[in-house]
View (cartoon, rainbow, N blue to C red):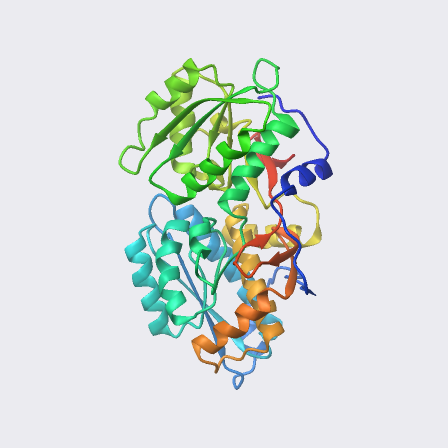
Length: 412
């Protein structure tokens, strides 16, 4: 296993938060979920039939190469919805959740949005990915529908869309946080020396990847390491990474930064072994899911480091209850995307309660109410404490660093 210099958690939090978080003014203390519901059959009798229904839509990949993200979001959101209904709903009103498959395709995401509107959606929790989020945000903005994405981290999702907010930290903050971690906390190379030469492999056709890459390069200019190789790939060339890896190896890179998704990362890790190239691999939340890739040898991910806001092995009561319920229902440990979605539903609940919104309001009127309310709440959840929101849609919270050891995530 690759060696890693250990640092106190408080030190890490301070480093990653520097320059990325801003104070929010008038806030209220939110509560988040208290425990995972174990009896979802009781939800029908726990809410009033006269108070109406909040219809929350979701959009994400439920099939295809990125299905792990969408399925996790769907599962995490459903647990939260079931808890809320079991506890009496929101102001007595029932919550319904409908998740549609976009297959990681922007056109299909737009079709899903229209289908959800026909269903009666008045709030959108989505989309799961940034590219589809940009396409859908253009429509939700026209409707002034409140949109809270659990995991669409590109700034393009919220840019010029006053109705769209994020649960995950933005791509720029991930790029800055990664550069700060590698440079200030420090990562040990396989030879025992601290990493001083870094290579980057990114997807130049993807807004998520390019957004992180650009800020990482910018932030790296003041760090005590050198970027010695930068290689890109595109949607049409994401199966053979031998050229990119060879250039990284020839440059003497001790660490390869991967601001990409887990499918491509699994291929890169497999191909690196065949080339006898064994650097430290470091990524962001897009790598969350790599352990579940079909036919992937998970031992190749040993020592992989990624920034993610959720640690399934955390010892707080909320995390332990959520993980236990998720395992009970779905027979697996939840990832960051499930936790983001769980938090997203509760954030919507807090915003509804803060605003006094009711199910009979028009989409636009409800949008106005929730847009005004979310900047006035502070939420404690699975993916961060004291989360607040800017009017621009950006969440204020810090990423956490995780490492894969013996096939599971461990906090650093």
